[in-house]
Image: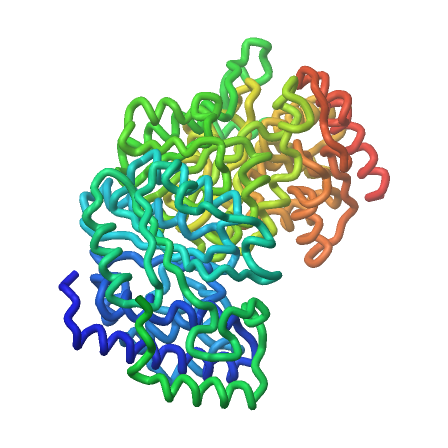
Length: 285
Length: 331
């Protein structure tokens, strides 16, 4: 991974803005979807697909590519937008999301679309699969790195902790997980549904290296990834703090937008807001 | 009479017949695969010894992964290895895999048709004294309703070894059903085993009146029943239907036409297993009277396997009675 220059930071922020617009347009066209976390992770997806990952959109099956596992499959509109913008498939195809015959299934289907590493949607399954990929890299002496993004609500799943325990046991330093810590899930705020804190201490006690970062600050997030890559004795998890619905005022911090549907008026307002933010998403400190 | 062309054990109907559990055949199959295919890896959930994959683990420690008592993660890690070019076998008791991790197998293995081989152990009443919690009587049903999943039920240790080796040659997801208790090893090394090809184990030159379609170690009881029935003047065919999915449809239809009546025999709930698969086929293609030998929608309990088979209607006597019942209906 090359170092991040000021111009690149600006470019990644612009891409994040584009991904947000794509997400709103896709969900409106589809008639359903999960906008809040897809908007909240736009910088993270921009950073991965346009800076962090060692990948080649023209060769999606390249054996040495880094693996990016989306565990929380419901946020796939932002993944699809990132894949299309990176060149995995035509941008035009984004508007087919959730429609009959589309390669862009409502939740990701590995066999239908290039760039999708795992089928997902049922929660709590990505980290275990990422462990399998990391173990295969070790068996084959390959240098690729495996990343896995999980939601915070997903940490309710027992299977997540089965995987957390196993990665700690195998000391998988070629695996980096990150959690989209936006504090919301389907039925409410995470700490009301099932208290997760202290996430940091939980992961540390399972033999993980734990970092925290502002998920909207590209530089900070990329720095955290660099640090994770430098840890050689254990896996790393980055708790990425994000604002659900980021960039669209009426959605921010409101859990009802986890899977809420906009009307035409709201969508128009959202797109206008996002366009005025183009290139100047605020960098929090 | 026995179809001698299939080269069965010479001691097939002798008290001295060798006894070995199908799980041992699985363990031997894994060892052979370990030698011949560097991509084969094995994962277990704290039951490596009792599912006989400890032999593989001892010989190929770098390719064995102990996942702990975590069957959901067992399926997930295997799926991740499979998409990275490995051929993983996951090995634990069937009540837990595919019982506990059914959705994980559905999404990560079957949906993607991943190259994961699932060994379900301790199936049927043969699990014996461990009792109802551990006797999987529903696993064939759970697995055969998943698109892409292939389902194989070997009848003895030799066939289990062949099925394990054959599973690697089948692309995509495969379920192999295994048992804990020692059972007669009545097939031979040269007895043919081709996935999805049912074999006639017992037939007669006289016109048969009933075809007994069986799978798993209880197939041996079907052969004993056929032998006794022949002495009583009742002619049957016994079909070893080791592959429940994809089913050997042509052979089953051919036998239904030839005999006009069917008895299915399995160590599984009569709902959803081999009998259901055969009934679904014949209802559509060639309806004939059928009887179903299996557990009758009940759980098992602790006991010796032979006691349980008797109590739950899986004995030689029960198979003979089912043949006589179906014969009455076919006339």
